[in-house]
Length: 347
Image 1 (cartoon, rainbow, N blue to C red):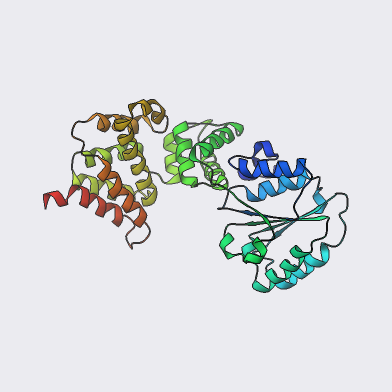
Image 2 (image 1 turned 90 degrees about the vertical axis):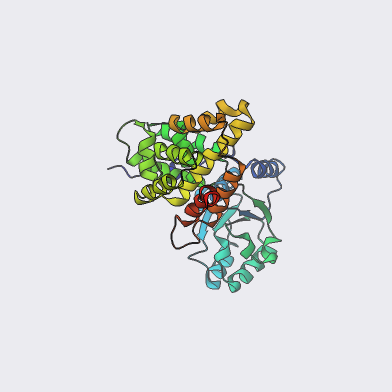
């Protein structure tokens, strides 16, 4: 039986050329290698799933470090002063077969205060044959003394377009065809994380009934509302139909649709309505991001003379989105927003 490999491991970049969205980091590192000015310590910071450890491994290979001279340490489980003292002793031994020994310390912010103090002594007087690459999602938790001794690079979140292209490419690599609008949905859910995008895609492909993955299959797996219901909700808002809108929200949440995702998708549609109305030249480009049912609703309400859906609608829904997760009833911010938009004027 063939061992399963997670998609994010299978498709992680293997060279600088394959790295997406971190051009500013890649350019600096390639320049240092070209000029033979490799630093003794680097700090890679940024949100989860942005490729910090992948790029750390690429850097190690690029400076000629072989596998047995590459050491990866998870600071979440090796966070004590004794662990760092052991590391301090190890770094003085010469590499087996490489110019540099590389130590990648992931989640470095998890180290204890005493461990940081021990690490600092090594960073202050590092052996010439050692390169440290510290990776963290929470740079603000690192002591200034540690940060100041590293060449620091902040990793950017990938754009939704970048994630969408990555999802389409990985799905094809797995022998599946996924609709662009479904790749858009996965990119939205990934929230700027390559790893999360691969994880969601893996679940989708595991439940696929055939080579071609339908938008409906993706919606079911990720807990997204059906396109038809989203369009009906937009129609209800445009028609000032408060009761119909509230009933639709209730039915969707009863079906297990995630409220935050529901509101995210609703915001995307309302935003698209305003964009098509204000900048018609964007129409064809925006059409690629929505299902046929959703885009029909977008065109319908963008062209409507009634203009019930306007910038106030978008602002009110955006404010509701900011409050999602702060109330006991998950749908309450959305329900209140609908009442404000469609109810108060009748009171």
